Amino acid sequence: MWLVNARTRLLESFVNERSVQGGYAILSHTWGDEELTFDSLYNEDSILKKGYKKVEYACLQALQDRYQYVWIDTCCIDKRSSAELSEAINSMFRWYEAAEVCYAFLFDVELDGPEDAKPDEGVSNDTQRQLRDSRWFKRGWTLQELIAPFEVNFYDRNWHFLGSRTKLSQLLHDITSIDLDILRDTKPLHSTSVAKRMSWASRRSTSREEDQAYSLLGVFDVTMPMLYGEGGFKAFQRLQEEIIRASTTADHSILAWLPWRSSPQGLLSQFALRGHCNVPSHLQSLLSPSPYGFRHAQDIISWALPQSETFELSPRGLRLSVFMERHSKTGEDRSTIVALNCRKDQQ
Image (tube, rainbow, N blue to C red; front, side, top):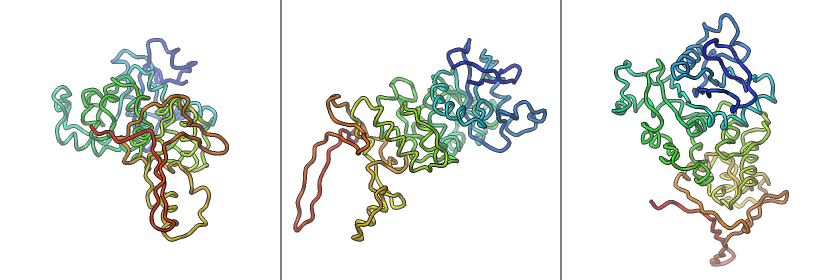
């Protein structure tokens, strides 16, 4: 694990997050032009890059908060090493979780001046509008960066303090649909259903399509190899398979998703409507092709079934215990209703 020394602006290596005496701060941001990378941090012209400003802000804030080190994804991962990149992605949620504080830098939010930043009184309507439109809430990686840390403090483009995650929790809930109990850290993340957690990511995007799956590893407490080039569909299928394998309870909500016209399963529905039968086998999956399948699952809750209940993935497919009821209509038209162990929250 590499960290930036907030005083020297140099990288230092640590065995893991627990070996950093005094703790460390961590920066959350969205990538832009001229970011400081692992190999460019030492260049003499690094101070001239656009990305230097937020690194400088984060280091100064860390020193003010009495932390000597800061973790910043742009320059603390040597992306030339595929092994280091894979380790970092699989460990990232844990690194954010272990940080003493997370600084969320919103480059597209700007207060008129520091005198307008009054977190105890709430943010103005104009600032709320800017927050709702901020790119930070639309990116895949920032989901885990919002919910993993113990404390998250938001700053505008000039590093004026906007408020903490706790103070802004109601606004953040309105923007992201994430439960208030999760934002206020009063309920464990694993107590929410798989479908609900997927819904938080359903309208977020990533630069590389595989990252839609990789950015959710920590949210579901699973690990898997990074295979850039496999495509978003395969990556998300592997993620869901790992979630099922790691599940200690039969959370059927992972199957509670809805197809859409441009998805493989949406195409499957169109084939069925038109009477076609030669549907490619990879379109017949029970699993969603992307987080977007869970776009309406923010109210899905699940309950634990006894461990004796079957819910396991094998090379031959998915085995699960469910209640089924077959309905017969006129002619040969039949349908089967399957009851999953999840439901819509009525509150």
